Length: 377
Image (cartoon, rainbow, N blue to C red):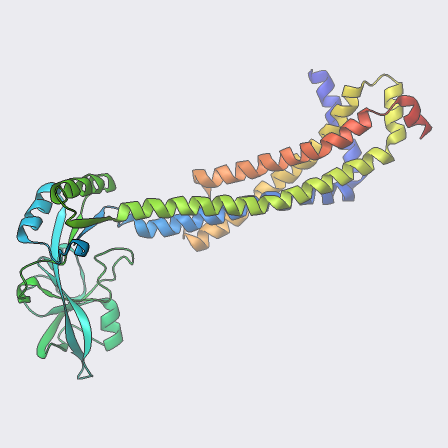
């Protein structure tokens, strides 16, 4: 077997080197196709990773709302106790009150803003400027509010006609988190007259634990009627990852069109080679080469075109992947993660397979020539 394989490979290499430019151009199509598939795949993976990294910190968060569709406008103290009971001992449970009040910044005209009342602000937020704890009076403002109105610890704002001192400017929050304070004004819950709560934030240690807590809360509070909605941000993360996988598949499908074009190029090159070498093939058949031997040589030529083009494409793809991950993720070595390796391997395999399939008809045509007819040509 080996004795028949290597002569075919040597002969195929010799035939390809006789028309170097034509072979190079045919192989270049495979290079471009492999780079297109692998690079677009890695680009999609980098975007998904970058996006889900931001979402990863909120996968363990829940938000419990009253169901206004059932005329339930607030959560009671009893509801809060039930939620605390269903949460794990290590969970952070933060009931929140809200009201809409006229707010004036730096003696400007008052605008109506939502004011958030939080019992334990230190459990949810960290200060960028000033101090969060103890929090018995004053207000905490988000970074966007502070930047827009030039507020700092010690600044005064007016809430519903009452002057309130800013105690701290809070650190930027995760844009996907329910607790994100960037555009909020937060005051102590004790400054609110209302007894009920508008929502409850539950932060668990893991996404799995958050899911279990969500199920427990729904079972406990929605037994007879649907009194609350429980928003699981972990489900949002899963949904977004599924959408990204679809996007990645579509990108790879679009890129694979370039390999089909490359396959047509190889088909053309192989057909031309068959016509040009008709007499040579006739001689080979006349001296004892069987159909399968000719078929093997021609297929080996197509395989070499695909293999060499695929190798070059893989090398260029890894270079492109290093750049993509450096700028999109901030970690060039992320190119070696498993999804990226899958895209590179799939692109290489598809490139070689495309070459072999494109060489089937020319190889069959060459092998089917009768020796007498080939010599006469």
